[in-house]
Length: 80
Image (cartoon, rainbow, N blue to C red; front, side, top):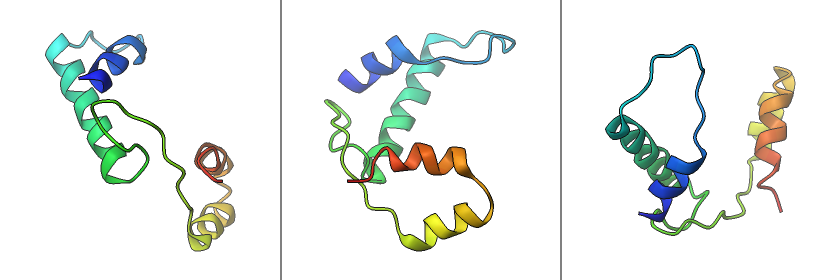
């Protein structure tokens, strides 16, 4: 439930979008935390702690070749 509370207190969206219902916001937050957990970025969905994640060199090469520097920058936050 901690993840859901964190999500509710911090999510942002495009102001031009129609408002979401509270149940939609909760469902999206639950899904986001589940994905982060399955990918190894957090250790638990109830009380999440960010984990260090190793990026495969091929992923870094792929993103570099395509000049996806903003993606690389975001991903490197998790590198040791």
